[in-house]
Amino acid sequence: MKHFYFRKLEVMILTQNNLSGNLPVEIGNCQTLYSVRIGNNNVEGNIPKSVENLSSLVYFEANHNYLYGELVSKFSLCSNLLFFNLVSNGFTGKIPPEFGQLMNLQVLMLSGNRLFGDIPESILQCKNLSMLDLSNNRFNGTIPNEICNIFQLQNLLLGQNSIRGVIPHEFGRCRKLRELQLGSNHLNGTIPSQIGYKYNLEIALNLSYNHLHGPLPPQLAIGVEIGQVGLQEPTT
Figure 1 (cartoon, one colour):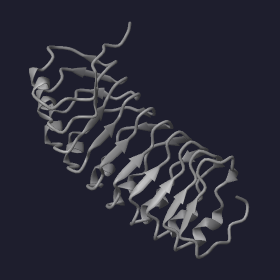
Figure 2 (cartoon, rainbow, N blue to C red):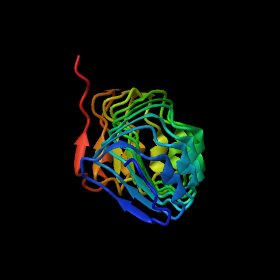
Figure 3 (cartoon, one colour):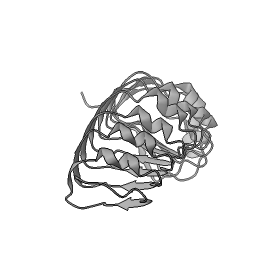
Figure 4 (cartoon, one colour):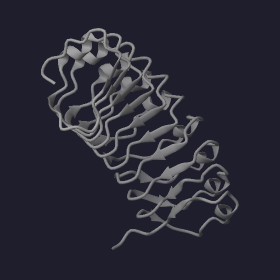
């Protein structure tokens, strides 16, 4: 990907090849580009700051590559962005607070990196999020109660981190939630009964490998059939 001169390009799909090298700085010259899909390659290096010029960008997928560094805050200028996937790369640092400016964002997938810190409150401003996947990173802190104010949220994946504290009972307000993955963290306390009233929770409920205690809420039997349930204790 050494040379990039396609200034009028709108869609770039290079998924599942053996492409290597860096994402060219010149990609920022393609102001009509609205879809970038370079997942499952060997692309490496930092994402250039020139992406701030991609004002038409709607879809950005660069999963399963060798990208690294900190997340580029300039993506916040891509106000039309709906889908953002950087799964399984080598990104470090914290999620830039500027990501909260992506008011149209529907899918944010950052699992399998080395991101750390608290779950940023700025993300809670993305009211149109339907999927938030921060699993398999190094996030700590607690689950903010306000995360349940994202009323469009359907899939919440926070497993395999170092998140502590209790499971917010406010999850009862997430009426569209279909999947809740909180396994392999440091959560304690009891399972909120409000989770049992989630009639739409049908894909998975995974609370395994935490430090939860107390009785299993009978309300879990009230909801619809869940595809997968995981409630194991961590091994000692």
